[in-house]
Length: 569
Image: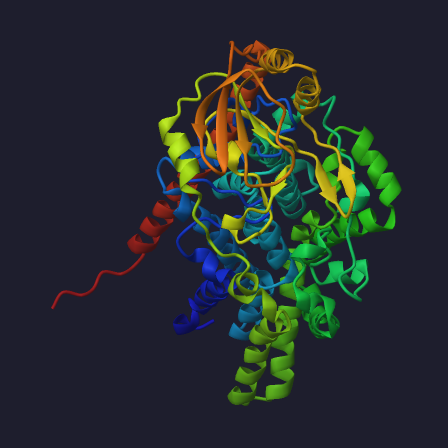
């Protein structure tokens, strides 16, 4: 690509990402399903891996809690949504290379597709962060094979891409598949690749091992790959769709446009296959695609065995969401059709630049038009909001002290009026400072997927006791010191407790139980194990960033030293 067009993929990636997010980039907090950001997230023990539940928010919550001391939370949320999309687009263009037509098509396919739209809608921002680093990990794997050394940036990329367990799995697999060299003289390099993959995933890996007895999941059939409209599940996955929650599927995916988009995608892939498959790392990228697509289809094809595996094998629950692994398909999904656009432009133009420009524009714009309702924050669904003033007043005026917070009434998700009635994982526990206990059961299409925190069952048993004094003592024994009651979410009022009212608003009440809560005991071994895991993770992240910065400075210095000085007149 010529110098004057060098930054065109970056510009196009930014434009597309901004158009996709739309109002989400405005003032306020976007709250949608699992997308929960609060004005300030306090760093607490549960976020470090000491919770009684599985570490599904490790290390993401801890990372956010640290960063929002430096960057305002609103700005941090915008960056967490925008930057991964831009990285995915620019990275896909870098992988494809070639003409401007190919690169722009790759940007569009990477940024604007059902996977990004549906994950934005359901709030899986950590999955999108992992998705955004996939092309760059492929490039890091390519460098590893060429030089025999794992680049410093790879350590940071894996750590950044592993903010959740499923995203970390995608990041690790991407680096290992693309960087692995099965020769004896590369044993050290391969071991370094494994170390890199493990270090970047250390916090959730260690926390998960400490919960090995309960590290299983249920409801695999509920979360399996699903059809979208008339598009069968396997074909939906071919187009990077098929999420289990029908409420977050764009309407265009349930119409003939989904068939038209799939036909266009497969047609371009067929045109570009010969040229694309001749590339050196094509087989490795196909292996990535087969892994991501295969796991997704497996959850649909064999839901009962997958359900058994998720429910009985520690760590098996990572596979229950059938479309998260589709992030592995990105290099092929964006790259192969993009090469098809380039080949088609060459065949049709016959040296005429105007025809080539038309084909390039079509390749860059058609995916957007076929998924038109993803534009502007999913047709305006991702609108920012402000939290109620009662929440801010309670946080600033009330000292919640020691002990854990219990959030009532039961129900993991809310649809508050102040959030435009949009469903969101209850933010109150994150909004207030203490560690918290909240109902984590999920109801999908009338099916209840049991929660994973054993303390929830203990809290239910405590609340079922016959007298306020008995209920209060049982909650204190569980470690609960304060109770927050959301009055604006409906449902029956929680049973009476022996408590002092700390804050009372029309929509929120916070009570302190009479007596002292029993502190939760965290074994010393767990503290040591998690401390070491965090040290390894931070070493990978900060060491990788520092090493990459030093390498960039040295490369720039070598470049400038090789430049002939200008002659003096």
